[in-house]
Image (cartoon, rainbow, N blue to C red; front, side, top):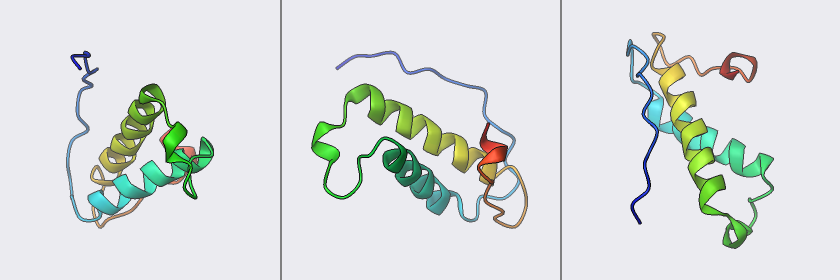
Length: 78
């Protein structure tokens, strides 16, 4: 499957502690928003999966842009 992947300029990294956990939290948050938790991933489209991963990567990038593993609030993600 050859699909172009959009590339964004990375956030400057300050501290990567907590980045993986925040990626997972962002992914689960987006899955919950799309009503795909609790065994309902079989209906997840490629587009929704791509959007969920992009959202999770954004959350992780915001997390490592500040010192001391300070996860972003929902308002900061906009």
